[in-house]
Image (cartoon, rainbow, N blue to C red; front, side, top):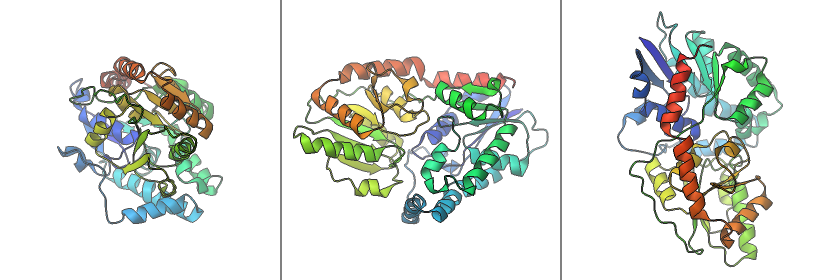
Length: 398
């Protein structure tokens, strides 16, 4: 019996795209098993969470304050960046890889890796076996997001070693999945000598239709509008831009009353500390059910990222009939059309201020854009479409 293995080094209930993707595949594993003589196995840090009926946010341990402190210092100092790389990435990848059993006669097995570290350690520790598929949840530049999290590693021997290790690992892969045509083009530009174009596949992310979804009437009063933003509270996600833009608009307009609900784990505490306006509320990590509740009562979704892969949070917002205001980075320009399902803007303070002024002035038909966003979801981002693409990949021979 053919075995399909899905591997992710992270926390499965984390509020990020890779974890959401992993949870979605786990939920729909029968889609693969019923299609042929195969079985699925899933490996991650805390797989027990997926077997619980209750939807829970990321657990808060006693060491949370230490981890947050390490994240702050890792952003500023090389030694702490190196320590953070081990604490947050390498050690977890090693632990997850150790869970994967090696069986004789597993040459027909398929291994889907959702991060570069677990793929690297698997190949190093257990050798090339079966079919290796790497799913990259970024813009096609493998280490860009990592260096954004640990900027002090940029230009050092550590970055060179990571790049060298990635290129070796890439030479061992049979297929690579990218989340957009843009990320595929970027990947080919950087790594075309290591992997042929025939072994690259573009598969758009998708999200389950939210259970018991009911469209909630949008709040039409300009004094009561609410925007929701989902992502790690970090410079990469542009939450500092949102804080500064709201502050700037409030300084010149007395009629600016939009409330922003920001959902995600805090990576850069100084963004929260510098929030001097009462319009922005940082809610931390929430369960999926709680996130849905905020989306259903919002008027629009906003994402100010400086760097992205293909944000699943946008797809989830589309399901809730929300217009999308997002930056011109990553796969976002492929996800929706500016002026139709929402507005695409450059990740600068001036452009974000213009967007906030436009929302306040009623320059955008939020209801019409939101309805168009829902249609876009139905046509392009259903879970069935994504699963069918992965099933086709399984029968594709490199």
